[in-house]
Image (cartoon, rainbow, N blue to C red; front, side, top):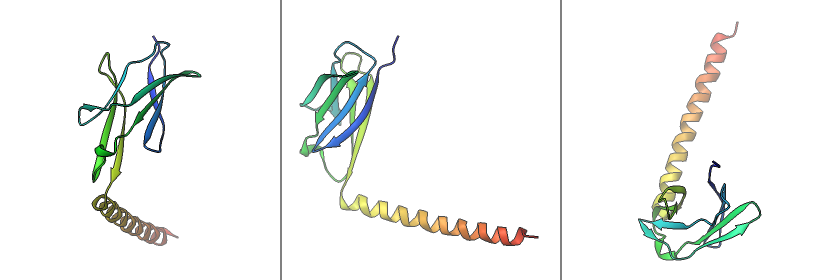
Length: 121
């Protein structure tokens, strides 16, 4: 039995695209956001599998991280997921986290250099 795999290809112009491999039968796909199915999901035959495309409705985007689940409609198995992060508060949190990581990296570099000088003989 072949493993069915769904790989994200891109998000462009508000459309998420993925490639589904491992099945010759047209899949029945549902994409949900907060357990609500999205209306515009397209499945088309591709060279070596299936192309999945879903329009991301603007009303689902808001501050924070929004997660979308791509599922097999027949088995309800989650095949993939994608997330979109947006908003000023989120960007400030990310900047603060990066600043903290930089400070920790600088501290580690100083400690490593000090260790190298102390162990030289």
